[in-house]
Length: 81
Image (cartoon, rainbow, N blue to C red; front, side):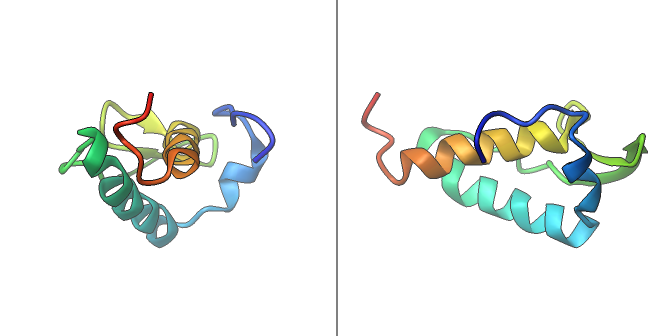
């Protein structure tokens, strides 16, 4: 990823519900050391213009992917700022 995704990136339309569910599992694993937990987060089956929404405030897939990118870059070093 070269920069943050926007909710309107056409690339996001290629993700399936199982793929997004796997990304949410990764978010739970990577986010735990940082206190980032959305136990109720799930694909809510709603789409807007072909993009799946996630049920933690109807966040877009772009938000999930951007957050995962930040967590992946940080690795397992939650104590570093």
